[in-house]
Image (cartoon, rainbow, N blue to C red; front, side, top):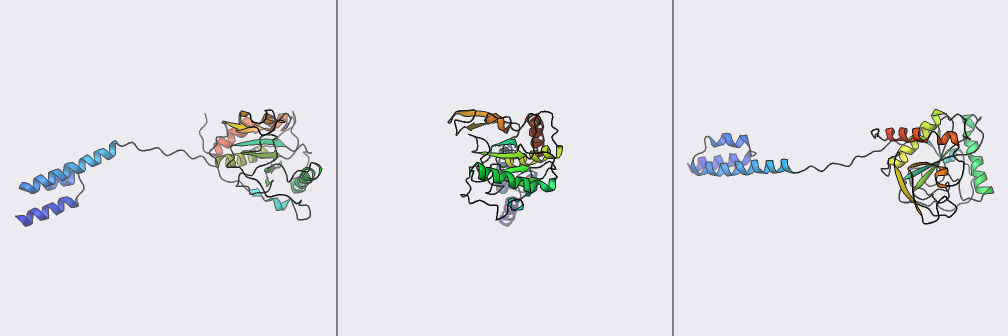
Length: 268
């Protein structure tokens, strides 16, 4: 009898709490049956307790793939490179300022690298900047070029929007997009792609508003003032200018919506 009870107890211990344990009870006599009942009840109680516990919801992750980006050595050779200090970095990018380069629109896209090199020469030469101000430049065919040095996937501090270069990226459309000028869809789609990717790295919704602190009195906001601005803003949102032109400014809502879709966000 002791041997039967020992074998039965071992079987009960080897079974999960629940209906399997209850079946064993039918052929377990005396004390062994009582012990098995306790084990069974304890197992059922533990399962029920686990079912009652709330499951923590995982935060939604909205990222977009990195679009193809042409490296800066395609448009900048050693002879044209100016001596410059090391890149500066912020902790993350939470907003993108959209610009236009105020240059001719009737270029062949094969000419884009040389045009960007001329922009670089003008900003580092005539204006004495340390590098191209924009983090990215997008041409009319939708090709995205790396602009300012420091790494496209890192939060490089640019020189594109007076007072709001920290925690932001500057994306410049190659051309002039004043009122009535057509803005190529390939260009706006590419801007949306780089916006979705860069803002996705910080979990920022392209349709949202963000709080940025001005670092320069020459911006629209005095130095030290915290402003609420669109996560995808025009240059003129932070600085008194006509950039990025009325035509491109009118396309910003579309760019925000496309970027949000690329991040996998639902429509509002």
